[in-house]
Length: 145
Image (cartoon, rainbow, N blue to C red; front, side, top):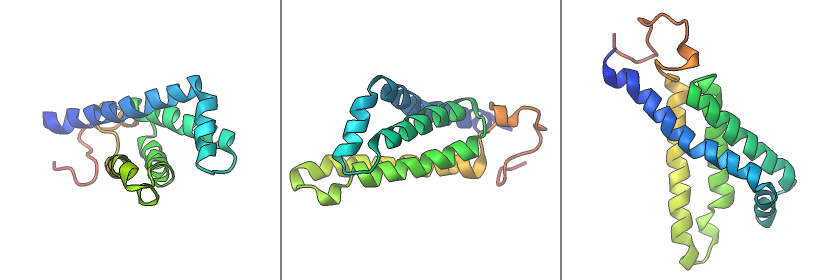
């Protein structure tokens, strides 16, 4: 296994955790604001949705950070990120002066979801709890020998 195959998944997981863990922690500190923002978008049960968002971001981000049940965490975060893009960055429904920034955020979320789907497909990599106890000669699908 070359250094790129060994370390790139870890660096990628760190980058994704950098996004989701602080967002989840921020929802703890600003829970009522998060629920209010969700309510302002006309979504039902804003307190429940805020709690779900907090848990998905925090627990999913931590799972990706340490590489525990990574494929499941990445799948949940990918779905969450696409839903957030559709409901909170719906640039197509905004006036032109507000649309550009929301389109950038929408596209960013879709790109992040795409990266998360790589984790779903290929797993967490060498430095992860998922790989603890796995034969190091066993590679993820598609990895060269």
